[in-house]
Length: 283
Ligand code: NAP
Image (cartoon, rainbow, N blue to C red; front, side, top):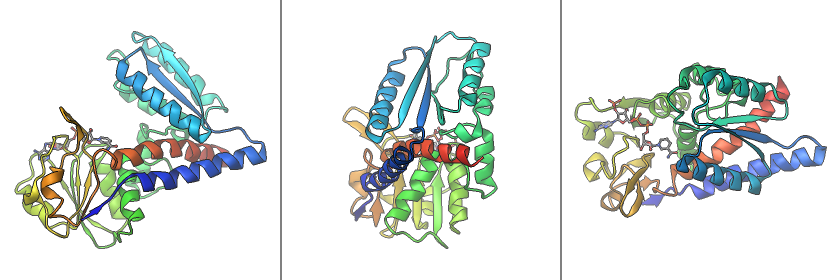
């Protein structure tokens, strides 16, 4: 069984970011700059922000944190977002979610300028993916799944892929990315009949149901390449959707949790600041 660790994949992306930052420095250009919008003092948001700032510091990406009151009104939020959209020194915008309930996520998502939308909130960026156009900002987690498989040398053309998730953050856009790689995709969900039969017959299985250790050996074959996207909190710490210990002897390869898809997703998010900067310099 091959363990598809995320770190070497993230390290490669990291190198790309560092060389883009170096390029800006050598040419005397502005450094890439990310704006984070955080509403209130939610502990999870603060911890996430700290991790991002630490990573950005180590990469040479500048960060502007915009902290607003948790009870901010829609108009004020939109005004601040508009300023960030128009500020040429801000290349990427990241809005922490979930937003407080008085803020309309749908309107806000559409308002983030598409070329600064590093978290792929704006439907314009998703639409591009569905049109087979990968020139914009791609959704981070689906891109991470594809990057891991490519990094470890898997040929995706003609492969049967089963994705157990039909959400807009994972299953739907990921199915489009696999189609672009000429894979044959089956999207599964909670109403799918005989799920183990479908996943067992697939070459690649992506799991994203959000249930700890849901997938046991009966879901896989000895040829299965498994990408476990699930992030679940158990008493012993983080775990994926796959019952890792019971399937390791059975499958051909699997991503660990933690240390798999999530590790790559975090780096792709920051790489999107570089991508966003390039898109803005182009247009
Ligand atoms: P979600 O919107 O709740 O989607 C869960 C999906 O799983 C739905 O399509 C649901 O089907 C399906 N499902 C649930 N129970 C099932 C069952 N018994 N059999 C078959 N399918 C089932 O969640 P999400 O936002 O897409 O996230 C999914 C997981 O990925 C979560 O654990 C999340 O933490 C993790 N995640 C990880 C990363 C990362 O970077 N690693 C990033 C984002 C999310 P229905 O549509 O029929 O309800």
